[in-house]
Image: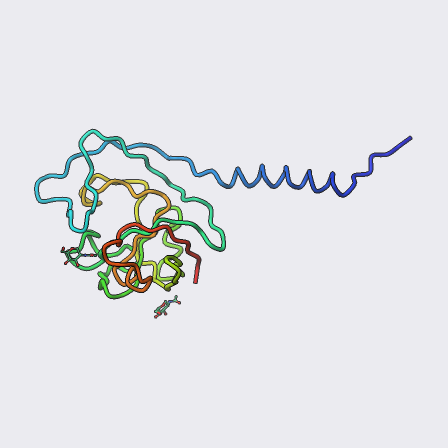
Length: 188
Ligand SMILES: *[C@@H]1O[C@H](CO)[C@@H](O)[C@H](O)[C@H]1NC(C)=O
Ligand SMILES: *[C@@H]1O[C@H](CO)[C@@H](O)[C@H](O)[C@H]1NC(C)=O
């Protein structure tokens, strides 16, 4: 009787199939829900620097998760002010403080913020051929939005690194291009 002895290519194939199943499972970050936009009351929703305001009746997708992390996680860099009176709203969630536009600080989408586990830790952001170290001070809330607490701004997409001016400056991005850039980041 001939026994089945797995050869190298069989093992390789089986491993590939198993890891790809596992990987695609881990890849999934599905929306957690949707919220209906409410128009900001007069004087609310600071539109400074192109901040987005919720539109009445528009549906916005919400997330509890962010895409899985790697050693160089892809993300989209946006611009925010963490200063008092800036478009970031109240003080930062990690330390209940405001932060100068001249210090490199960021907010991360809810999944990556991971229940404050990255609070006051530094991350390395790479983009535009340079990199910069910045401190995580806040959450870019992917679960909620369009309310007073979020200055009537839509929920954050789940792949955002929302950064102060200092970060954009350090990456050497020309001023007229500030606001949106494909980047990668990792824990510093
Ligand atoms: C936003 O715009 C105002 C006025 O145009 C400017 O003074 C401020 O520094 C800007 N904030 C950021 C974060 O770019
Ligand atoms: C993050 O970087 C800042 C500025 O370089 C530094 O003062 C701080 O100690 C660092 N934080 C951690 C947790 O390493």
